[in-house]
Image (cartoon, rainbow, N blue to C red; front, side, top):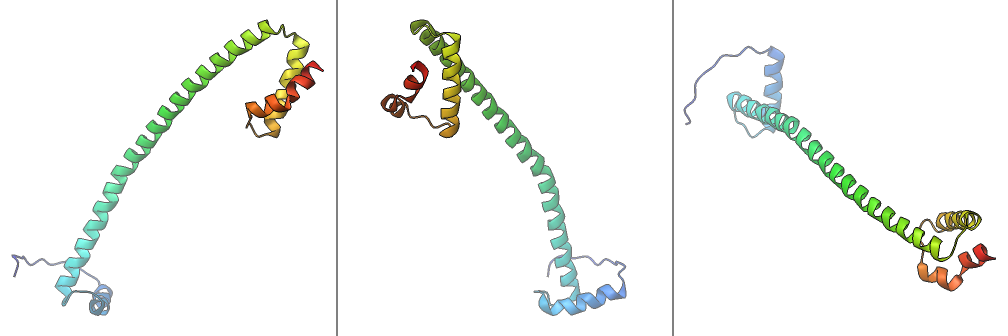
Length: 138
């Protein structure tokens, strides 16, 4: 038998009755063993709860850091796309001598096209269909 020491604890008589009722459903063969198992279970529960309280903020913080990193990457990519778009707009406007009236018609037409296709624009379909050129240039 393990090296054990005897301790006295106060319990209500109802608690002893509940132990007696639950004893046949446990793997323990006596009340002392049952109480030891119950105490071990409760200690494990408390330690798990404590580790969850410790780990939860760490996980939350890591997710926050990953989202911020992703936000920074996306912001940088969107900025680079905006610069490329501005360069193309400058080149096109000087090459085709686009005035403010044509620019406004083109802007409205493109906004409608993007809205109607849910932002999925197929360049080859636009060239083949030639909607934009027909509507902009008459």
